[in-house]
Image (cartoon, rainbow, N blue to C red; front, side, top):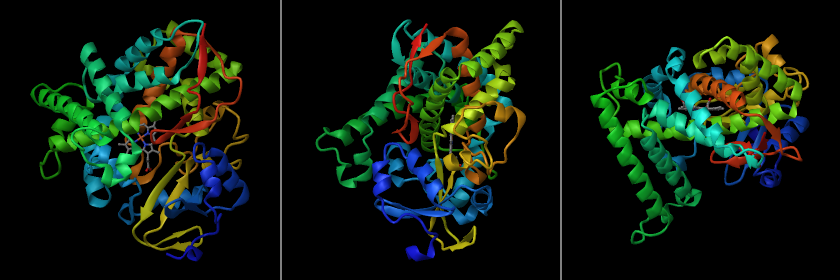
Length: 436
Ligand code: HEM
């Protein structure tokens, strides 16, 4: 497709290369230089037409789902399997979404609150006192335990730990090179990165198959039990393989995103003593009233802190789709095959929507609501994050629990930057804190 048919934008991929690890400054640069939509060239891939105005985002999120395909890199199928909802489009995607949605309905969150709080308590106890340490590994421990317990439905402590270890072993053995280059996807006599990855994936799949069999026999209150019981309109169920693919998708989608958000929230709170004091006051009041974990997400200021963290640090800063039918985007006729993206980060930095956008001010979410085209940390339209309610709920419960059990000082002499981490963007240093 001719580049000239697309909106203007930078011609060189050089700035993108320079900012590969942390593209947030580049996105701000684009917003300062260009009126959206802007065509951004990509290295070794087609350009992306990026917009961040509410009108442009409405066009992308509001269009007919059948005219959009997933833009997820197929390489991900190596780790997730080709049936992952991330890789599906059209009618197939709609079917999977219908089957996967019920376990994430708001009223189900109550069942998960207590185990989220327990995981946060357990991991907070592991933070050493009077020592500077990054908080991200603790946050990752919490969010992975929550996935294992709430989603996989494994609650026996030693089996939770074993499953946790196996998941981390697969993630550690995953090397983007083996996903990208098919030539490397060979066993080479049982040695090498592909063989190691396959062996670890197989061992994780075996445990998952065991769990699926258990849930078929004795369903619990977890997401897996609901997936096992889920039926299509024609009465068909998800196969074991499909269930494994979606469970792995939840790990990839829900672990790192939520963990980096916990770390960012603690970072911003400890840079803003008045905000932290205000939050601690609200939490102390809730403790006096013996508020149960499932009611914590109703605390107004806590919820605003979570919303503001995701505004300033969206783990997925741009949300990309491939169009399969021509669309009109802010005066441009884009042909089928074009990649378009909603720039969440730039939308969250628009002065027209958010006054003083680079300041951490949870109050803005107390006094005002924003449309899904102005505030979009969870994407939007027919592909909006399935775990959005779960993640916001978890972030509230985890932050409240960690802050109730520990006090910290920030040990970051310089502003922390964003850095690319397993599919999402998180704090480059892991946010170093000293527990008092
Ligand atoms: C702070 C935490 C999280 C953030 C910021 C986040 C963000 C996102 C974003 C931006 C998308 C793409 C949406 C789009 O294309 O419009 C997405 C998709 C998805 N997320 Fe999340 N997510 C989070 C946590 C979770 C959790 C905890 C789960 C599940 C346990 C989850 C499951 C999914 C799934 C299954 C999809 C694919 C939806 C589809 O393609 O239809 N996410 N998420």
